[in-house]
Amino acid sequence: MIFNIGIDIVEVERFKNIKRFDSFLKRVFTQKELEYIRSKNFNMLTIAGYFAAKEAVAKALSTGIVFGFKDIEIQKDTNGCPKVKLYNRAKEICENLKITNIVLSISHQNSVAVACAIAEKEE
Image 1 (cartoon, rainbow, N blue to C red):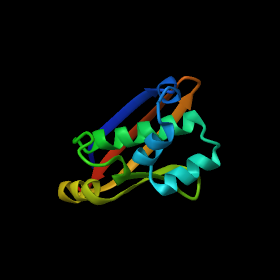
Image 2 (cartoon, helix red, strand yellow):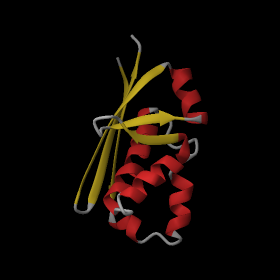
Image 3 (cartoon, helix red, strand yellow):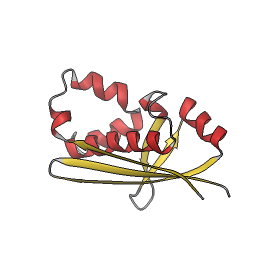
Image 4 (cartoon, rainbow, N blue to C red):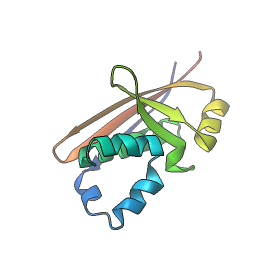
């Protein structure tokens, strides 16, 4: 059963203009995410897509960002599709709300990245 849907869209240009970019990356992304971003040569579309995904997940939880960005980790499954792993406060919120799964889609083109997250719970 669908609990909630979260969608976020960001302009890629926003990430090109961040001062202290390295500090931003370390504050927002987990080590595993940073490794993936590094493997993509710090592609701004990838960074924007992952950021939008974190925002979309927070919206799907109906909380907004009331926890650290690193509490939401974007991973890839064996087919290369995005999946969500939660830690700390974000994980607690999911457990309290009885959310069993979060389906995630990320897309980007030229100047924007968008993500949609669907939080599911048992019926």
